[in-house]
Length: 440
Image (tube, rainbow, N blue to C red; front, side, top):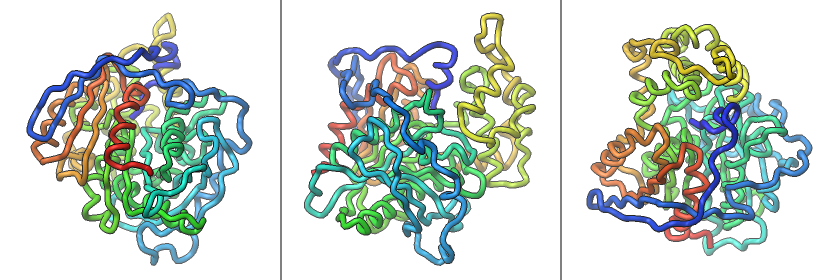
């Protein structure tokens, strides 16, 4: 999930970043260290914050023709097989110098069947590979929508918005990784751009998309004459933080043959059974309920997407897959504004029915979103802002992972919201990667 784009529409930009402060450490379990950040560095000149957009690139939004068909016989190819690729001619300032390629590869969907999926792969420029080849880092994106137009790989800035209002914090993160010397793979996830419904928040599908993106990135690099290592890492924000944790749980089984060395989850979407009722009474969050309804339908075609929605949402939920996040949000929110043009907070029941979780399909969906079932492979860094709604259940989630035996480092960012975990958390993420998966 991602929120700043909606808040910005009515409230202005996010709060400015502040200067560095010290961290307080406290042990919460034998293998768990909580790093409480009292302030985080503002890193200028190419970090996640404030890159100039500049002139709009040519072909900033890729045609859907690349996404609609896979080469014949793809069903017989192993997962991770690179099916096709094209050089991305569009560029973006924070990705300058990296070589970008749109890719299609084989994976397995939420129901276990083979599917073809898409994404982007970026190769570093000006860096010699490490001994054994370049390390691969995956970037798993937050909520961008469930429609075909929501595939981040279609956009030069890696998030579906018009060029005039492009939100490029994800692209800035990818650019930072590329300049550190990693090959960076950016999966779209199942049903994003490609045929079929997006299996929103399905952890198994996202985890497999992530791991197979590593395989596809390595195959592409080999086609281009570049060597890559089996050592890899994954990072992601919100829905993507959940996806990163899912991949870490699956790395020793589905990811056999690869070696996961670092997992970074920014504000991961977890404990959703508790989160959704809070979404229902927060005007800037209740549109996510519509995506959940369609995520359930992607698994169970008989599911009625209006069956969990209150009247504010039920009248419009059929349009959720039409395109991408901003369009869906901007359709819903203007229906309920006060006299000053601000969103009116829904009451419980306006957007989400009281018995929303009673059905078997909903319970199955919620179970499939969990990323606290198995010990993760390798070390994990969790970063969470204390002003994010997800923080309310965060300590309990951390306790569950600690009980599983995960090798955890946790950074709590006081006063930061859901999106600001990205710029404020960068110093910890960078140090974590340099320690656990050095690019060179």
